[in-house]
Image (tube, rainbow, N blue to C red; front, side, top):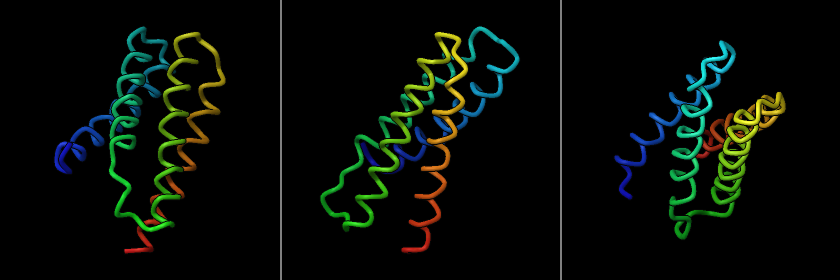
Length: 108
C-alpha cells in the first residue's frame, strides 16, 4: 500500500471512529458499524506499515500505535455488545496515539 492511499484511509478511519463514538451516545443503531469500520481501517494502516527501515524508538512508537488500533477494535466489539467498557478501551487507545504523535513529532 503506498503512502498516499495509507494517508487517505487513515484520515477516513479517524473520521469514522470519531463519528461512531459520538453517534453511539445518541443510540443510533449504525454507530457501532461506523466505529468498527474506522477501527479496522486504522488497524490496517498500522499493521501494514513496513518497519524494516525504522529506528528502535520509531518501532517502539509504532508498537504503541498497533496496540492502540487493536484496543479500538476491541472497543468496537464492546459497542456491539452494548457494554460501557468500550469507553475505557477508547480512552487508553487515544492516550497511546496522543503520546506517540507528540513524541514522534519531536524526532523530526
